[in-house]
Amino acid sequence: MCGRYVNYTPITKVAKRYFGQQYPLGDTIRQYNVAPSLAVHTISRDANQELPRFNLSKWGFKPPSAGEGAPIPINARIESLTRSRYFQDAARFRRCLVPANGWYEWQKTEAGSRPYYITQPNQEPDETLFFAGIYEYTGGLGTCMAIVTEPAADRIAPIHDRQPVLIAPECLEAWLDPAVQDLRELKGRIHRVDPATLDYWPVSDRVNSPGVNDPDLITPIR
Picture (cartoon, rainbow, N blue to C red):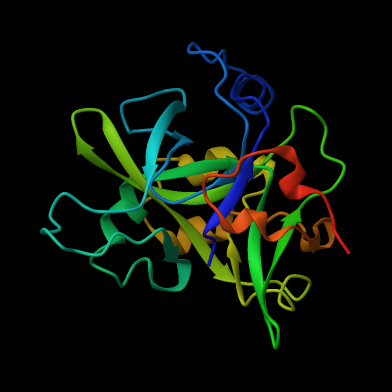
């Protein structure tokens, strides 16, 4: 599960470095504790668009057909994307990218749950990771999204058994390509970020509070 993440690289830098675009709305506040239900940056491309589109999407997925009281999942397992009626249309037609510098997971111990920050260390100022995502329209131009997860790589497994699908930079356009609607074909075109480049460390339990947002949250503690 991915229930909190970090996104501090300015979206203007992300747009320029990875997509050669100018982001027209300027930068937003740097987020060190992104929680479900917040409006978050996503990148998508519809069939009638030549260039990717930068959006603010609500984190929490609910298709228009879902009734009142329906679940609002924040994650979607890649293993069941095509089998789930909740996710299958979005997986075929409405995929997105979620820029993030890293994410938090809680390791269960005898003393309780301990938070860890998982990231790709030594990122340059305009570098970021990209989570695979799916999205739905919520009325008008509004969208909501879920982060796609998969079984954790061996390097991450001691902390948690799931992790976001991390799309390699050279495969960003492939994940967004609206012409590819067969997920089996898509999986053959998508490479992941090398897990060997990831690292993690324990952080303060201040991150447990969604209202806390400062750079010290990702500082290692003993």
